[in-house]
Image 1: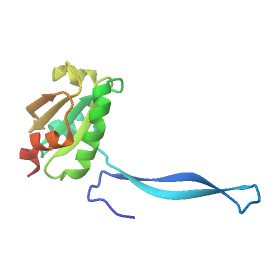
Image 2: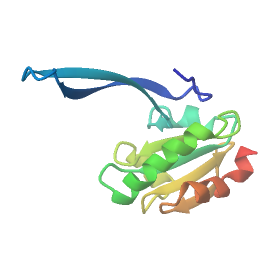
Image 3: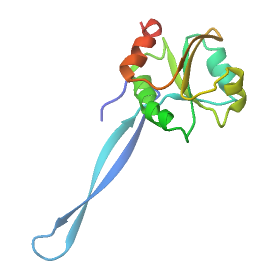
Image 4: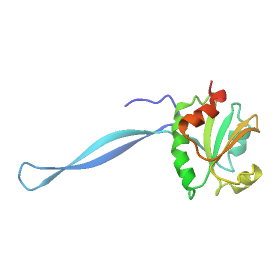
Length: 147
């Protein structure tokens, strides 16, 4: 199984059920094929860990403010997850914050529309983007932090 360069990735096993006839006997032979799938993992920020993980971080932190019920957030979420697997965590930390679970933080940073993305450096907001974007656009906007 290949190993990832990203320590935040999680490997899971998927068993796929396939069927095949058993040489004319009328029985169906069930085959379970084992696949290893690697899932990228952006950090998940909460009200409990936000100060330590974001505001006190020694490297810049990209935070995607999102909600489960938000269609643009659902479209942008996999892009953030994929991007998090490609970026060097020693240069930029990539994470997500559910605005429904962390309403105080969302209000504090005036997140009025979602998805909203904020880059924090030394505990301060340095950039803020509203809306979804492609992975290429996200990589370009954050290129100053990933070099």
